[in-house]
Length: 85
Image (cartoon, one colour):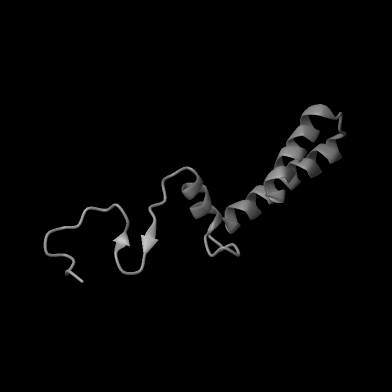
């Protein structure tokens, strides 16, 4: 979350503060490096075990719930695919 906030803060700095040429380059470089780090971390598991990408999909309602024995919850069973237990 802090990395996302950092991008916003750096962007606001560019918009709201008069910066010299060198300062502007450094802030722009910071935005680029921060975004690069965010991109690399998208598929690294968080302490919950889910990746940031999975957490975002889950939050948006696109990640199907998984179980070990059934597979995708809500997925229609194909005839003969699963045996009765």
